[in-house]
Image 1 (cartoon, rainbow, N blue to C red):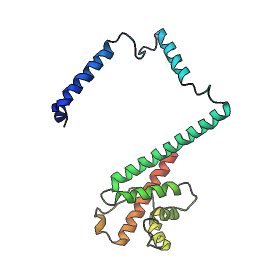
Image 2: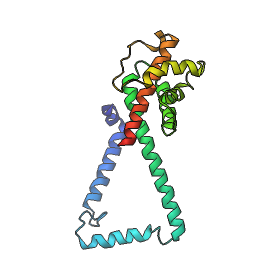
Image 3: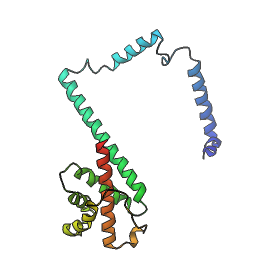
Image 4: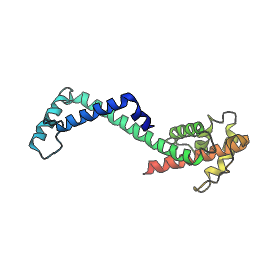
Length: 192
């Protein structure tokens, strides 16, 4: 693909243009950026930059505090989302060949919401899969979730059968097993 771009008539002109511009910047006597932090001129360069972007001078203490709280709240939410994304990625890697990825995504979203609730293990599992298995009664899902909620935590064995070939009962069980994996990983991530 790169060969095709370089063979395009205008690509040689662009390459020459950018090469000349790059050489001009390199040979320019004026320093674009002080690369040596020990150089005395570097301090004045950074002071000048700080004056141009000084937020402290334009805000009073109250406004600065509220903005910093908003910033750190947003940062905290990004961190939580990255943990959820990491867990979701791990589960997708393990189960995407068995279950549609949008199901795994829905389970991960529900698990993130239910992990902070004070629900029992069975209720957490059911809450994670109930939107996907809305045709099922909660009591039936609790029956399938009971063995998962009360077993030792460990590796889950799953039949490698395509999703379309599974019965509705097998789909419900597999969905609950995936929900258990997501909840276990989220709990482990919170403990770290």
